Length: 288
Image (cartoon, rainbow, N blue to C red; front, side, top):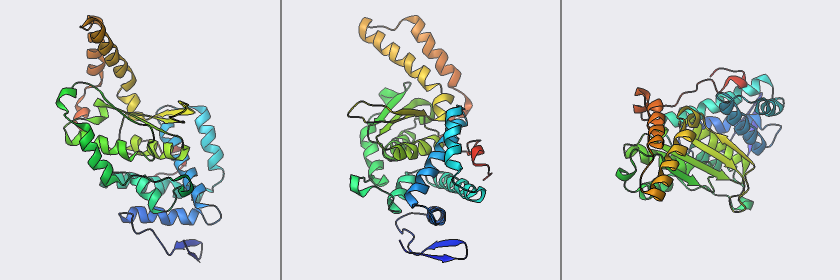
């Protein structure tokens, strides 16, 4: 990509044309500006790491995560950090305007993919079509948490497509689904975490080698905690095991599930889609 300098701004002459919306084009321009004295891949990786850690620490504050954030943030000036904040605001706006695999579109459109590793993200239109096929009949699953797993998640596009397919079928995925995303690439995991978190998807993002059954680290989205997904899923599995073994569910287990569901069933559950910035940008030191 050729660039020319205009004052203090680096202007791209070749903004990717296969990225929809002016927002993503603005994101690419900011990325180029921040990459004036750095590699674009490094800037994007730093942005994804800081964004993911900021969102995570908004609900599960951990000193170790904050220290990791600060080590990366030290590489940038206050003005540059405000541009990082603007980049995440762009992603939020794009997801609100049209829920989709925004970061996958950006990552591949801006040629940030690792071609030498054969890295290629499935176009979201194909993921959307396949999600409808895989979801199948939803009637028999109503009243149960639907679990969806992707062992090579990339930026999380397949799981986003599944969430939208559930929404089309009348299922509030924010409370009646659990998504598990795994990838060996830490950057992919962080992209997936950002998108699944901002879309209100209860999810666990696992960085590690699926084939070797190795897990390096796990991050849970805010909605995973808000919906008490872990507790409710555990109760549901207990019921299923009891039913398989004795043909019925112990009363205590049934009551546990009922209590868990009652605790999370509110009027807010009826909202099909809700994306808000919330406090997750506090560590950036800038309001957007």
